[in-house]
Length: 452
Image 1 (cartoon, rainbow, N blue to C red):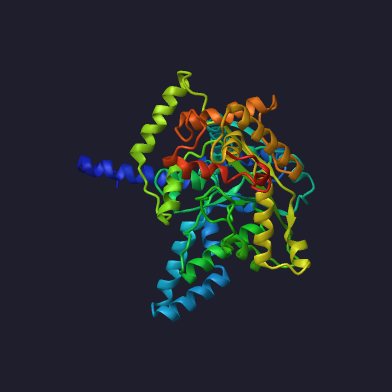
Image 2 (cartoon, rainbow, N blue to C red; image 1 turned 30 degrees about the vertical axis):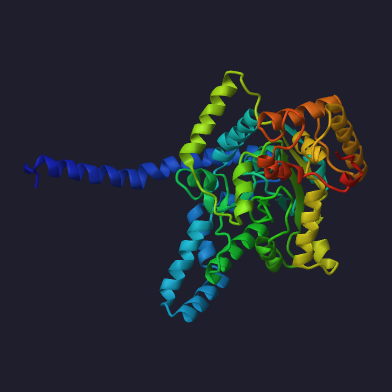
């Protein structure tokens, strides 16, 4: 029994390797996980103490548990059985398909990544690119029931929208976004998923997929997860706030019951002096397709050129980025008054359009019209337009020092980019891009503006 056994070195290494893996799996890893889990729980308790909207249990659950909970939801199981009957595939195959959709949709929220890295990176990037002017988010959230589920609904101007809003509400809540397929690229997908975002296939007609997505949205809403969505369903191609696509909104309404916690929608209007994707969006509008061409090498080259110029002091960024917040809209009150999903979509988009900030570049683009005979004439138009917009209750995020500064901030980028000539005339080849910016400004006062 105590004799010596000779074994090859490779076999000894293999035995020791298996022993080490077994020890780590059964003793070391559970202890380490417990240690870090306890630290994470204490950190989350401190974090929740300072947040207006607490991080909900759904975010704190293990991703695998949430995937299982979604995949085994009775309505998802029923949908899988219907899918199997309609397509002729075995029930087990249909159920595995539903589980695959659940794994695809469910995020893996990390408070460390979100608050330790994500919000700081969002703040740094926003200030690097833009001069940020925001509305009174505290005033918008103050009157909301702490137990209600908050859903920020926004116009979609740029992919910077995700970055800007993540930073703006970072001290109040962790926001879960619905993001499209553009973000399902490694390693970006892992980072976005850890920030609490969930991926959606826009325009999918697969009934089983839509049911899995609907149940996830409904479960998140029931748990009180703070969400953010773009009801337009995609980036604006013409600069205007478009009609709502009712997919996610209909999921929320269909899953809500009168005894559930209220769902409160907070309208958010976003605007930029420079939309980073403006030429891509205008080209898409002219071609009639949303199939944007991804050119990562070109994007990286432009990003490096900008960073080099920014750090050398050769550029101050892309002007102003701003957000305005509207009055909250209660789902309970809307449905109690006989409202419909369609009516909800119309009310939300109207509320969003009412708080989209007016910035210097779009304002000057709107005032310019077909051109101006002189700088003084254009300045007078800008002043008159500002007065009309204030009277109409528009949200103005302009330099506080007066009209001359507004004209300087708005006109100089247009001339520098070649959209407007030195003679204050629109450049014909860039008219579509100029109109893209002008379209974000309300037009009701334009009829009173002098034209030349």
